[in-house]
Length: 558
Ligand code: ARG
Image (tube, rainbow, N blue to C red; front, side, top):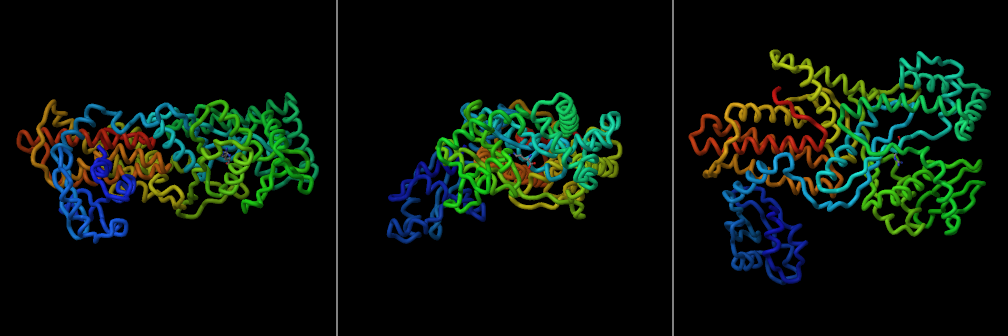
């Protein structure tokens, strides 16, 4: 139930649109005054009346109903009270009946959203910098699916470029098969770092030749390249499994090798290509941007060329309604440029391209440096978090069964939640202690709350029927939070902000814990006890649904 919408529909303010009323309705600072409030000073100008008079006249004509039980005008505000018993009844029914579908919707109505995320670079380290794109994209993927969209997860592999020539050159010189097979991506990365440290002019020439060989389809060069690629993918797959993210397509940059020429032709045809110092560019000066490079002077294509080809391919293949790119803000200019080029090409869908930009993640001790092979591998961060979770559990609850499994869920959950708790654009500093704090605004705190609710349900069961008693403030707060879940999801999808879901989960967990400590559940008198058990079960379900969208599992016990 969207109360704001319901109220807005019932209010007629001359000269003010329903949307405007809707967006003006807020939560009053003090819940004693009401559950929703409409400040009327905003309408004083259009209505040529004082806010106090407006509020009074609106209050006198507003007709209460089964949803809104009371309306009053106080100091230029219109305050509404929600019919709590009706709300509690409806919300509990919806959550318990819909179960793991509670919060889902059909708003997507089969429309397609492509999500380009994680997009790992072959033979390069998968480091902590890839955490955000992987878990943000993974959460958006699940969220859009939950809201009835047809989602296409795309891992736009970084598998094109001269570095692969360098790698083959280094492998030929210093590598050996068993070592690379054994060491996988780490061994490959070492070869690459060694090349960058030790390469002579002669080796650089050789590397260019190897790159040309890959391009021209040489069997041996391609075999080595494909081998590196499969080792990289095997490695990242383990991490994707841990983080619970999936992809529908691994069409990377190489995939577009033969799909760039048509784009270049189209650009030419539309008179958009300009020569500049031998290179082919699209001039974006009129739009206040540096030119978009399409072909280098040696004829080689660029990152943007492949992204243009990929965009056209995605539109043709998936006919998307939106195409999202979950990529760090360092690439802001690239996306602005390439979206602009699509617009200049006359693609009406250029407006459906969205760069979902996010900030940097660094470690507390500042150990993040990609130069010369000094990197923090994401796998190590996850493993360390799982290990730490294990020791925290050992300390808190040494007799717990399945500690390994629980530590895995807690550790991985802490990493994901830590990355998804802030506005995505903010730079964050990752701290093991912070993300594993049982009392903080963390995934662990939410998981712990789930375990607590679960233990109550294990003892009391989920009642077949219950009546709604007179509600305490703590109970009402939980009910209201539960009722908000569907609109939180909608909002998170519209803003591409999974943090709205993680913040919701913490808020609901806090409200539930207040209820848990304020009100007896298992020892409450009959009648009230059934309702409180139902409320506990509904909270557990909703927390699990929220965590699930973020890719986090809730252990039954902790
Ligand atoms: N592999 C790129 C990088 O690590 C990200 C690719 C993002 N997706 C895209 N279509 N450009 O920077």
